[in-house]
Image (cartoon, rainbow, N blue to C red):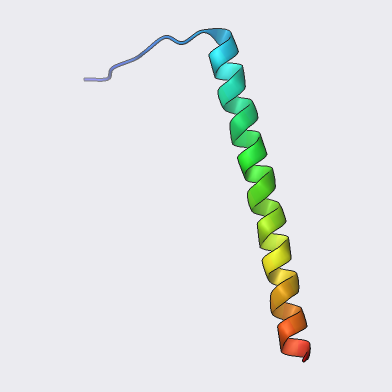
Length: 43
């Protein structure tokens, strides 16, 4: 049996915004980690 909940539109939009920000931050961290890895190998 599947349960469903209803949330206000503003809550859903906030959730999407937060998720997008988290993905953006993760992408930035991945780039920084890749750069750190390549610069460490170059030394």
